[in-house]
Amino acid sequence: MKKTLPPRLPHTEDQDPPNRRRSVATHFFKLAYVLVSLGIQQGAMVLAFSLVYSGRALESSIQSYIHSIPVMIAASLVFIDYFGMTHFFRKTHGDLVSACFKLVGLVMLITTAFAFFFQFFTFPRYVIVVGGALMFAGLAAWSMLTLQISYKVYANGKLGLVAVDGDDAMRLLRKARSGFKALHIDYVGWAPAGDPARVRRLIRISSEVLVSDSVPDSVKTDLLLACADMDRTVYMVPQFYELAYTRFRVIQFDDTPTFMIDNLGLTFQQRLFKRIFDLAFSLLALALTLPIQLLLALLIRLDSRGPAIYTQERNTLNGKVFCVYKFRTMKKDAEARYGAYQSSETDPRLTRIGRFLRRHHLDELPQFLNVLKGEMSVVGPRSDRPITIDRFESRIPGYRQRLKVKSGITGLAQVMGHYNTDPEDKLRFDLMYMKNYSLLLDLRIIGLTILAVLRPNGHSKVKTTSDYYVGPEPTGDTAAGSGGEPRDADSADPGADPGADAPER
Image (cartoon, rainbow, N blue to C red):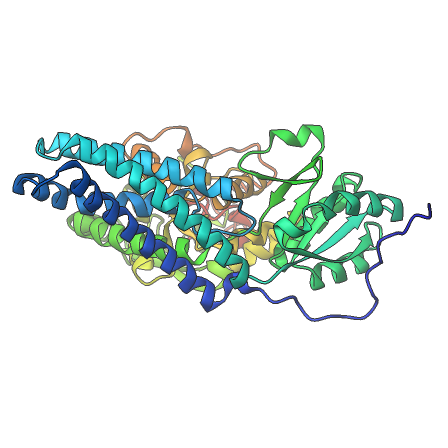
């Protein structure tokens, strides 16, 4: 029997495939899913009261339930976000039913704990049990119905294959065809991994790309970056060592498992919840720390000449430039007097109060104003200077991917690394955060940050063995005073962390 190879990618340029995953209709669709889910939740509890009590329920029982409603709604919103229940792309009915089961179990557990803690003993336990069962049934049915509706809301995926040759592409297509109908995917063609121009053209006309396990790792890296730039979804047939990857979904094509590596960045509902949380948390933080900040500003002015607050241009979401606010920790005109190099505990440029502020991370407090303005988030990748990002992107492919979310006052890289952890490692932490984002993760990072503020430890250390470390000039305290020009200030900013800032202006 003659073997028919899958068609190669046509040479003509095509338009980008429609991306309904980010359309206004999908945002309203997801919002409707959340609102109806909350309605089902409360309806299940009301129905449970009717079933448990043949007659009229006690007034005290009703009041106990009413007091618990805000807790149930808040917990539901957190877990809907955490389990990604509004992210219907490539989900199965089993995925949603499993998420519904976990959500209902956790919400009922929290509600019971809340009732016990506040001594709402009149909240009937039978109502909680029956309500939980009804809630699970209602949410599971609604989620499966919503999944079916989502197939109409979202366009069919356009799948392209990247293989080493025609035989490899044919093998891959045979595997993939079994899942086309269930996953609502249309095949658009294939491109050889050794032809970068063809591969980029394939990525352009596809919404999803399936990569053969025979493709070299070096090609996979470039391919992943190209797909990230164009917001394409990638499926990769993993090597054995890649099975250790974390937080991935497995999509099976026939009897071949693949990793589903979705594009970076937050969904619309995640950005919405995160913004609401940022506003609430920053307002609370400013209210609680305002007396401390006023005192610190006074001490800074008394300790040395110059303003209490300094600003510096940084990058945030999509590369947008903004001015970050920080308490001044260095002496006035530090660059002209000492030159530009990376800060340390014994840095002569630091003021007395500045050394204390950096050790306890208190110089970051004014950045809550940046959060209120929408320029930053409480938790996110560290903000970098524009020239720093350009420099690191030339050395670290993919460094700009951290700009897919707003920069943060604190973040996973800050609490898990050091002031000047190598940019490659910071990028790994940032990408881990972006791929695993949830409000619960933000709360955990904030908790670790508070501990770091109260108990300065290894996170404050400066690592002088890094290739990116910039130390002082060996000729003495004043690099500029010996007749030479000050070193480029930007070279002293390997990660734009508090202990690695260029001298303040």
